[in-house]
Image (cartoon, rainbow, N blue to C red; front, side, top):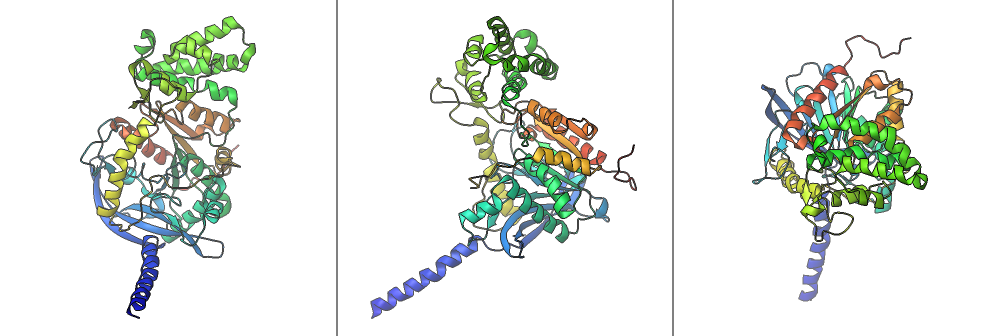
Length: 499
């Protein structure tokens, strides 16, 4: 009898404690904590509040289906927020937390790294003297399964995918969440900007139209940091040809170009290569196997000149050099590969042979420095307490990539909204979302050319996360300030087209 009683108590304790333990990890879908801080930006002290926690995602019946983790920085002492810009910030993946731009680019605190972006110990956080918090309030948003954001526990994987994991799903629920945020924090009258990095660029491009058409929320600006193809069809020929300017940039950095090119500054070399890509390489690749042999050898020689690769391997690839092969081949004779998202980084493979690197040298470096810094910052600075794992990259597969029209959605949003401007920021050494294709996006997005005066493009001497380099951190934030300022219409100027 005593044994039975013991087991009954034990079973009851397990049954009671396990659900409570699980519940404690993923509760409070609608709760926040607020702290205060100060940072000196451009020599001026800026006081702010930081509100962090979760804000709900609601279904059509008003039921909470997820809680999105966010951090909202609001400069204090602002009497009239109707003139104060609000920047809504997303990273990409899909499945990546909004950590990268939060603690390395635009926020008031940045992680401790060296001047070129490499990890250093002890890990930590320091003030960001270049933050845009002096000119705009900022909210960093983590989609479902990134950061501490989660769907409700009772939702199965199939339902999660249906609600959250796809181009259209992502845009629709995030637009609803933004509506909730803007309403709750009373920012409807503020000028609004979206900024997205990598996969965050189709996200914010699609959101620009979704917010207008479904929530009647109109933006002043969209900032695309290291943009993807935005659903804009490039075709197999431009896809092969357009990588050449990036190859040149990476080869220039590693001093693999001929001396006459190597002696020039990077930005003096690239226009020549861009012109060759459009005027000669694209037509040559278009001819495929019918390109005359003599002409094929001439093109191979020119590609070799601009890439640092041998004519032999270029001809072996029929003039179409895969990026994975380039990352492996450029420094093969020195025993290194180069990074995908930032080709300044070096990696070491098990074998020199092969057609692709064993791992992404740049990404492992970034995770090395960002992960401890963000976990420390959330707990010790933002005072957010949870036992949930902070997902730098969370499970969002399979991701539904169908019906990606986000680049054209952004063009449509601009056409409908004369106030809306676009800024693209790209790193020359980014091989994942290369800089020349980010220019190509703009050309194809608006074939009429009627919107090009409202589109800006900026390049930087770094990679995918250009802000990790100290010099580019300053320049890129200054470019954001300038863009925000010029995207604010003078008081009383109407949003209209004039003949």
